[in-house]
Length: 142
Image (cartoon, rainbow, N blue to C red; front, side, top):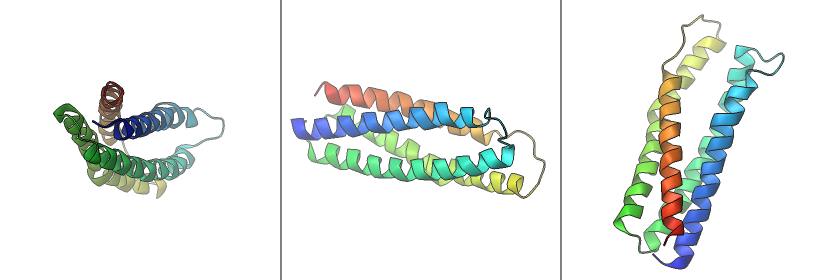
């Protein structure tokens, strides 16, 4: 893979990884521990933050895909890029809409049991973090 493409894709991959770690594994759980933050307030904040994160993730994914595509990548780099793109696509197209519908119901005052949707979202985030880490390291080795 050419040096400029590998460096660009690697830098953007690690930026993406840092954002996911900071938001999904630091901000999201901590906001509910802040004094005065109720479930509806936390959900409202979370929806705004994750909407912004997901928009940035989509842009970063596009940059990584383009950089990898023009760089003459190995099959492993192509596979890792495809995996992380599919993970993000499923999160945004399947998991997030379900979580949004549920949070709409909670914000409307319904008393609902705990959601498995968050477990799926976290599982995707963990898998995405692992894949981004491996992809970033692989790009550094180019």
